[in-house]
Length: 257
Image 1 (cartoon, rainbow, N blue to C red):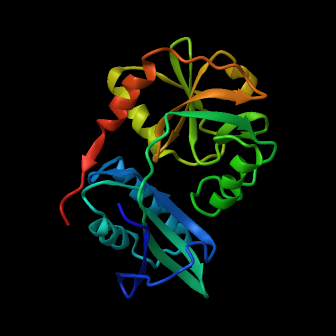
Image 2 (tube, helix red, strand yellow):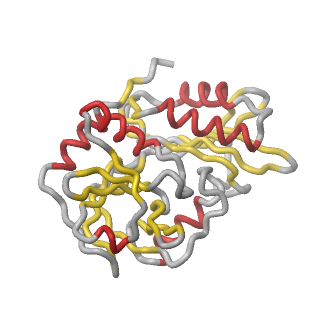
Image 3 (cartoon, rainbow, N blue to C red):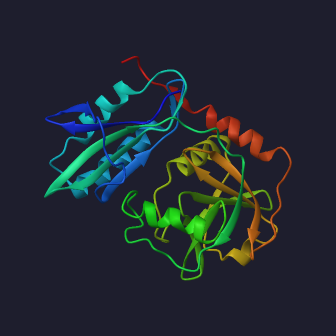
């Protein structure tokens, strides 16, 4: 599938970097999505989220044209996990596009509750990504769960959804967290089939006996098999397979560049 490539937005066009440190410069905004043979779930939601955040950081930059030109570079075959980002660069902001091969998706994950919250801007994806990623190493888990005043907020690089008595629950809307594109996609299907979604304030202990899903663009839905030093979890046979298929069914094929 090839190695990762990085492109810099310069003079209104993307140019490939011969060499760059992908970690250079403070990330202000970032967004990534999974493309499988040129098809993406909820691409417009990803691009709109990136554009809104970029508008707050560097409104002079043309997020729409940058994204359009980046998509033209995306191969229409294979599995890719491209990333749009804005970084601090000198006395301004630089846009970059990372074209990265995607690993195979994981279907299960082990959780742990983080003892601290490193987020400085919960509503923007980008500035806290490195600190959040470090939590998974710190707590030796597949995903660390962040709390807000004792209530579940989100995963370090994901959102969280759970089932109790065949009812879907997500984090209450007044708890600070990232607007999850994957969660939005699942909620769209829930609305389509008439399944209510309950926005809930819950502690980890409140999820004892629940079926817990961790949602992200890269992996889609992962079932939590263990919550270390936390609640006991349960998974209903066959449930996640149905929802994974409905999620995949929302992929839209990109036009040919």
